[in-house]
Image (tube, rainbow, N blue to C red):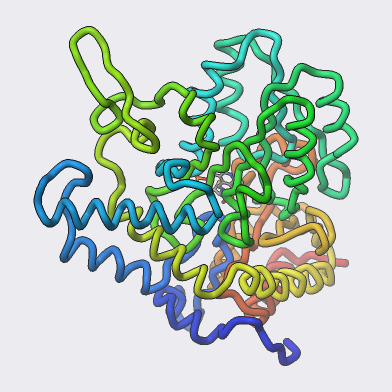
Length: 418
Ligand code: C6P
């Protein structure tokens, strides 16, 4: 079914780098992994870097005056420098290692937010946000008494930018916190323009980069973004490591998040003073091997080239949108190909998304089903759940064909007409 296609990347070589992809998940059913938005798979290079670190270099960082501690510190700080270069931050002091995107957003809410937000202030989010960019602000709003306002979405699945401009004009907005790419609609939001508008109105801007940093080149200086949070495990890196980028002056002025070892300069029984950036925000023993793995993931993605990655995914996602839209009874959510990347969420008549996902799994096709931690968005879409196929560097158009075939099979099982 698939017409011959030349991918911008050597797809066979890439697939060979991901050992997990080469397996049958049920007798005679080869794995078709279409759930990378939840967590991507890891190439050998990342697994090997972590194995090498544990076999040769592991000790605690920044503490011991011995060879292994020095090597571990160099590996950990080397990973920070790789991440700095990857997102083009000015200084590695602006790179805070966290556990994931969720922790990065919570860090900003509970430090910058607590220090700067007052009753009556407004924080602007959007209707398409992941819960990790709603709930921390709700918790804090309840405690402080500032207000949350949401940018609505259009029926096409885009942010309503007129409503955004009106919010900035009419409300005392202190911070805008919005996702770069939607994990359900795939919408790529015009954050560069939105950031400029927020700054003109005197507000700061946090970008949730969980679904953008793995897929497209994100340059924090070009965006002029104030904070950017993302997760290692969605970008070919390990779980347990994420990044919060913040402009240095903002991070310097913020109080610490967690208290403990490493984040202090001096402790007395009467009080403490804080360590320099980035350590002020990294209390306790960090995820050292995971940082090393993230550094290897950054090397891997940079080696492929983020522009090639985007071009490859576009070929696969656009094809998926075309093929899925041919299926009778299937409703696709999100805007047209010119505004989207990475994911395709759908429903099939009134069949529950979990039943679809289960039938697809029986054919070896792994998709996610549910509200994808975006319940307000699903309410806006008028559905309780969607099934979602998500794509990454190792996916092919043949796998899209396997997905489509499995959906046709589900239609037969559920005896859907039309
Ligand atoms: N979305 C998905 O399947 P964590 O869990 O902290 O690594 O990432 C949270 C997060 C934040 N923002 C966006 C846009 C996200 O997509 C996610 C994670 C996964 O869609 C798990 S719910």
